[in-house]
Image (cartoon, rainbow, N blue to C red):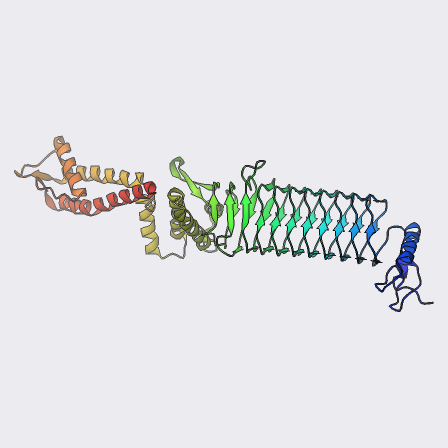
Length: 483
């Protein structure tokens, strides 16, 4: 008699014309006979159920698998219950198919658990499940609701390329090691509310069609990546009670993200001091009560900026120390655009002070960019020195006083006379100082007149530069005080 194609697993004859035994055949079979053969198999062969086709509801609730449990390629045509089951050794569900509900709440996996390539046609329930080692769900397909509420994975959790067709719930789950949802697709809402990621978390290339919630999520350490991800619905990155500011003390990368619509993403109570947004448009993203990077300046002054800018400026300092001069390959234009987006964003929300800081960063990137024309860089540098790109009111005030006092000294040194043609000396400094102020404010005083070419040149210079400096001062005041 012909042997089953999976003879090495079951040791049985082929009972059906498909060349398979009653344990492996997908053809209609006697359920009582299957149950009998199944019990015999488990008694004699152990927990090796590779490619089995279970014709009826299976219930392993509370069962303890003391040896390796292999359900590789198995098909569960009805509900499969593993509620509270204990897997003392490795559990392998590679490529398994769950045609109905798959229930693993409260299950305990003492060793590695693999569901790579598994298909969950109906609801998949893993709430309160404990994975003492790794959990492998690479390219698994979840067609209905998926629950990992309060699940715990003590080692690596791998959901690379997984597909979630309905809502996916990871509420209060804990991932103690490296976690990856890279390339995963969430067709409906994904809930990572109050999830704890103890180490690296990767959502690189993931697609959130209907958005996601990371409200109260805790990222303890390691890198976090949303690079090249697609956020196509309302996506929330919100702080919570445990973590006042989400993303505190971790490096987060939001590079080259696709945000559509442009206002789909919300950051509230978020620490973005170490977050990169290179290649991502964020001009309409909501930023409420967020912490940005601080860019140190001269004389102890610092301003709000972005992490990408801070990293670039630090690299320039390192370049100077190492005497390398290649600055052409740095991300000047990308960072300039991010600063411009944030300037537009904060201006629209009425936060003019931060908008001014990002305007400063935007102009700074353009000024430093080697691709910017030399003349343009010269005027940008002059603009920075005189008024901090129109954002620093103390600078033009200082220069106004400097010019007024300097020109006063110049008049006294090179010659100035009153209406009676009497030359004034340094004892008349207050009168000349008032004259200098009048020249700067275009009042055209007639009481005094400069003597000679040098003194006249000072007057011309002051009558041109004075109003410009005072105008920059007025502009900076307006920028800081407008509402």
